[in-house]
Length: 255
Ligand code: NAP
Image (cartoon, rainbow, N blue to C red; front, side, top):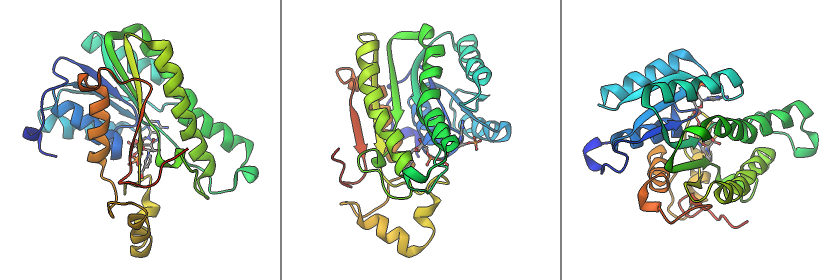
């Protein structure tokens, strides 16, 4: 990503992005930072946090890192407290953490796995926003990261897809509850070859198959997802709330 290409829509703004030391979350933090935001990044591992902060700072981005496994209540509180201590407010929160721990059909998924999917993919985002809400600025913006799987949960990741469908509803519900000062929107990425989705690039045949499921005949990039997220988080989207943008190169996405 080239910094000089972008505007400065986030000058003076403070953005928290969860699960942001690599992949889509990192690119979102980088894009918001290129556009002038002070970005607060986090993930489970200190080493990853330190490396990601180093990369952002080397690109001239004001960045703070905090270890935050989203399931850890104390680490969620620390993330918010450190942000407010350093920057005094929160303008943007991007909720990007997710797990996909099972390839089983839903009725053969263990209760502990169902709990984990609900916990990481949905509940912890709500809890983090509960901690963040007293500090949200008057024109703040929240963006959930859902998935193309929300629209047609695929075999092998069906329950993951269902949790991502729930985020579409959570977006609508919170958009109503938090209006008029906070907008709440959602990005549903298509297939992006990250660590999380390493199955996409497990073979050339699989990769082609995934590319051919798109109209544009290519996989998405983390930057494609960052661009849509930055749009929704910015004042360019100031009359948009409760909506989901599907960024999937035309992969069908009807509920
Ligand atoms: P990724 O490249 O594997 O990155 C995952 C990031 O999350 C890492 O920084 C990881 O760092 C952190 N992380 C993992 N578990 C965490 C936890 N419990 N708490 C806090 N941080 C955690 O993944 P990605 O593909 O960018 O996925 C990001 C989001 O996009 C997810 O919500 C995913 O569902 C969604 N998505 C991805 C695709 C795709 O094709 N890639 C498609 C649709 C939707 P640590 O290891 O240090 O924790």
